[in-house]
Length: 192
Image (tube, rainbow, N blue to C red; front, top):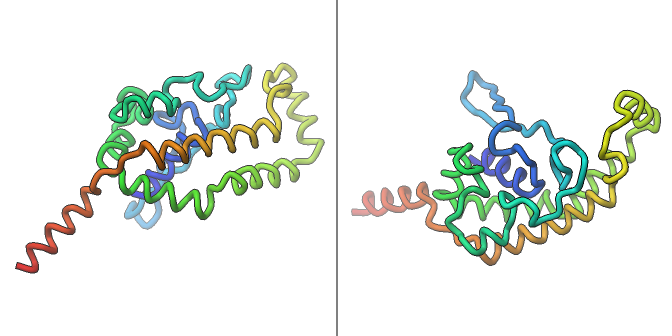
């Protein structure tokens, strides 16, 4: 369950434009005993518009707008893009306490703003100049080359991370986890 929650949370945090319907792979090992999700097609993340032509500021896309959720906590288009992903919609509606618990764990351990932006900085520093030159030769009209860089990504990570923290802390009202509820009921029955 945490793998699916992580994928959902990463899609929301990174503002991955297609996370809810076509930008993940289901992988397995152990003869299919365990499945996990791997995000891919990450060209529309951290504010970059799908075609690379502009930066989408927070609030410019209603599907990723925290303010809309604050006004209507039952709205799920944010999670499922109006029903295109029933799995994420059901996780969001029925496992809120697990989602909140996982968000808190990730933000305290591996998804701090400084961790995410630091990973970008390290990755970018390891790309040789020749790779940039080959990329420009192959895609000379790539629109995003003049509008995105480490500073833009870092700014977006900080602003988006802080807004999502605020939403999760103040407006995400976790309900009882159905699995915990079942466990509690079974425990009570066993005690009788």
